[in-house]
Length: 408
Length: 80
Picture 1 (spheres, each protein chain N blue to C red):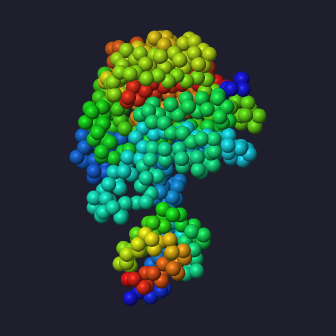
Picture 2 (cartoon, rainbow over the protein chains, first blue to last red; picture 1 turned 45 degrees about the vertical axis):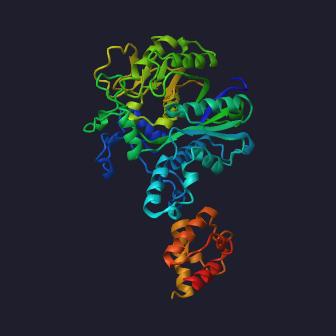
Picture 3 (cartoon, each protein chain N blue to C red; picture 1 turned 90 degrees about the vertical axis):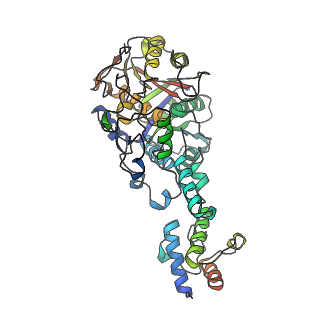
């Protein structure tokens, strides 16, 4: 590995499948769904009454007084980041805080705080609005809190590229280390907007599954019966580190973040380019950036969200940019769509797939779309030797991010 | 009229709820920021909750003078 190589030395997550990486990964390999009915009273009037809710509440990990000052998206970002930090073993390594950066985003940010405080404003007047409102709702809040807790002083960055946010956070982290601005970057994404307004907004777009009677079957990428995505909440975090720094301290190295490709469609605010042109350019760039060719990519953790409009374009894109040989999967079939955290969680799934030589399954692929002409690890996890793999994330606005991970 | 002890105990309840302060640590000589570790935003919450609990109005320009629990007790005692 060269001095500018970037490796992954810590993983953290709190998801609908588990309160940490190990339980989330076990659930994925077992093909378990994290989608359940919304039993809250406010859900009764919604057309969408299912979601992938956190398996472990942040209150199990963070004390009550601290939670008063944190939006849920911030709280779970802290949970995931601190797991990744502990996993990396950097806490007692004497790392100079001026060499530690944070790259952590959210697709929607603190919308639930905004809405809850608006309820208070309407009901009780402006003096009752919490003084914590602004730091709770600001979209840089999750990154900022992580930076404060870890004392990061090389820069705290927060991007917003809708459902590509988590992946773009990784790409920025890679840039930061390659350019020498930091030796370690805590990178990830977070999202927690299971609230009637965002649910109603996405439902009004006809983007979400209304399979309310069969929650576990609702997220079904590439299946003929797919009728939209299922909203999930959660956070995923990676510790990215300069390779020689990690080797010098004898760190456990999960994988190498070998390349990233970012493009934009310049096409439509919500519709993906049906030919996946921007996606193809992102995938090709990531492969080139990694110094590889399409042949080398043997597995893709696809973006595939289970929408009728979105899923098939990516298939064309993978064929064009990589070829017809990779074994693909969509772990969103189990986790639901974590929006701004999706790219982070799916990076973790891609890394563990490489490390453990197994592709997690795509559940609910009972009746594949006729245009699905790639090999999907349907229903069951599949053993596969994986020297290099890709994770794709695309977001509203036409954001395309592809990441290439390899064995260290 | 509430006694100074009753006001102190009412403030202790608010401080526990808002800032996680142990009620046993609350005494008139304690500074909100230096001794009880109440940050500036949480102090705003304490003030608003105290106004509600004791039926007083604590103007923003008065809050900076309330350094200790005793300062707050005196203000509330004199104005409620």
